[in-house]
Length: 397
Image 1 (cartoon, helix red, strand yellow):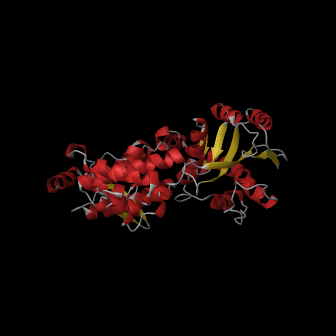
Image 2 (tube, one colour; image 1 turned 90 degrees about the horizontal axis):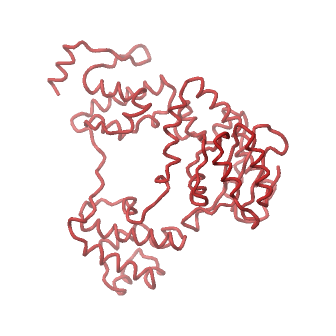
Image 3 (tube, helix red, strand yellow; image 1 turned 180 degrees about the vertical axis):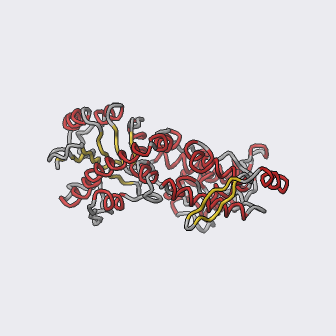
């Protein structure tokens, strides 16, 4: 394997990739000490399996500009293949404001092809590539140089086995006609909104049991300050203050530095200077917020109150459909989705797109009393109900 350390070397490899049907890509990064991921290494491989078909791109060499890679991302004649691409795509979007097009995520494809929920790379390597992955370098500090041969071998394996996995899954998806299914799932990953975190919306990530508008207003302002500060300084949120400290501050509502000194969960560094002042200003802004501007508590998970039996039938239907189509159950619908459907909510992802064809349409028919479920040996069969039975069901509803 070759390690690329200059822009010219990267450009040469990307030029070769431009004539190929696909290229597999992975990244190694650090995020423990920063808000944004620190890109440390890029791995790439071409389909031909030659000695120079797989390379490591050392982005920390100091002589590397990623523009050639971003140009390759824009080349619609080459499929960019990743596994569990979300974090990789976030890095590239932050670095270059670009998404790879077209791109293929083998984790999503594996779920569509029935390999279970959140199919791991090691699992796919074992089941499809008939190989194994050395996990000993998993927790490497990828920012340290030089990299050992063992670390390089571990990193390059993330893209060499990916070739076999991609070719297998792409063929199966074409054979089953599920290209549209995969495309619907990947749309989310290439939407900038997936990766943009707005400070004013950060409070929605904080888990709180209170539904008090006034309390939530203080939570919102504290979370807004923390997110903005962490983004500007490129440090983890927890380095500013953790969620438990945020909730303690929202309850105690400190008015002075002395009040901050009495908080139990706040880090020592946060009790002085810019962070301390930011906390006090945020608490003041939250307390002075007009009632009409208070944030509304997130709706609780819908319960199938009075319809628990219907929710259970939907679970049976989901299991039967997942087995019939060879798709992971959670990819079709979550347990919360099933409760929501039983409670009468129809504005759900589980009832739209390919999910509607596979499960949603029959789920609604089941709820409307138009079909029933019957045991047929070890399988479940859908039974059309006569109109009289449907009318009785409508009357009972």
